Image (cartoon, rainbow, N blue to C red; front, side):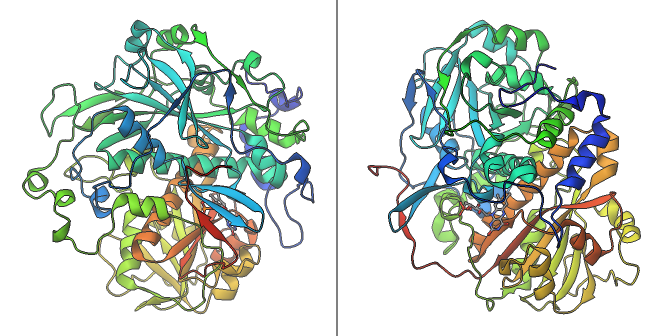
Length: 586
Ligand SMILES: Cc1cc2nc3c(=O)[nH]c(=O)nc-3n(C[C@H](O)[C@H](O)[C@H](O)COP(=O)(O)O)c2cc1C
């Protein structure tokens, strides 16, 4: 394993059983009523990391700033085949990054100004960095290259020039026009504020980035799939974050994942309804070959002082590292616009759907609520629709999971434990959504025996939502969410319950990170659903782990809550001014 960062001291983690170590990390970084997970205990403002990474000396190619005239309706994102595939051009790539990682607004309070992005981030610290590995694109570059996305400039920095042959060899098994999108994390950005719990937050943020990229791809009629079989060494090598010479004196990036993205109608000449085989990894020789190229740029330093050391963070990085590559292949149905859509393209006929928001509008306006009004309720219909959107059930006609769940090539392992406060037509109380209906029995066995497990009236038959216990859960929800009122003043809040120990034993300790990624994608879907419904949401990383488990009756590591979330009518902070994302003179 060549994974060692400049801020990592030699650690004894190799001598520990990786599975035990990962479970110990999770246990030790729980917040308790009596004690929060270990962190510095104060804000070291002078050492705050820069949220914008640059590779100094690398050529910067500006992406065109596009007007918000984007056609697809938000609802079309969820109508299979509704969005015709756009070609891969510098403009569509600009849109892809705008909708996934770009700055979406600047906020100002007094003299202080800070950027917010289309993807949310714990503490707005933005540890996630985005990369692109792509063939020649007119207006971008005359040769294939590896690029780093710079959100402040909405531009791509050329990190490595690749030869045509090596790129073709790397992508030989994918549809035409396919490219790779990659994510890494500057873990230090979260560690700076959150200490030992930071690794969890970085993984949540990767999940949000995967979700926002998958949805951005969908607005362009593109598909996306994580190359989940790749070893982390390969991800690091392909993204150039294993090159110590480029990170001298700079904070390192942890490799997270690579995904293949391709126009949905590019199925190697196959007609609609036929399948294509997609490998979940890359040919090892091609990976090796690709890393021997001309590199540009040195990573900038983000903090004044060196990162603070936390031994347990070094250990969990090592033990959750994916060290092997599996050459698994998935069979995918080939997409092309459905007959219905070709006859009736909703995107070009907005009058047929008056009042429905555009996907771009919803994506750009997404914000975390800072406070909820304690009054607004949502209709039971909207509530059921929101929950239906996080259901990853394989669509029988399409033979695959619906967008965005088709990006995660594993069995869903996260369920929702809900605190319902203000949903018209639904009794307030505790509810459970089993995202995999086959898991209802094991959830039921693991939870309080007195729970009712009744289907709420009017609940769609195919939505495995159950009332557990009626009652006013507002105070309880806020209490277990680190006393944050946003969890009780909303219409509903929830905990994302992972099939924890069984997943780690089944796949290996590296799957720990995937559980957070799946949670982050759920969060991303719910953020946008809230905006489209006319309310707002906030991700909640700060919660008291075991008190949450006690509320629902989970008493061992089989199920663990990994991420919380809240949705309702928000209250604006009048002290904040909103400024446009680009074109400001800073
Ligand atoms: C993983 C994660 C955890 C978060 N935890 C909290 C939280 O505990 N409390 C809170 O008020 N906001 C929380 N947030 C919201 C962030 O503070 C917010 O995303 C960030 O300030 C950027 O603002 P934006 O979402 O409006 O772009 C969380 C967000 C994420 C993605």
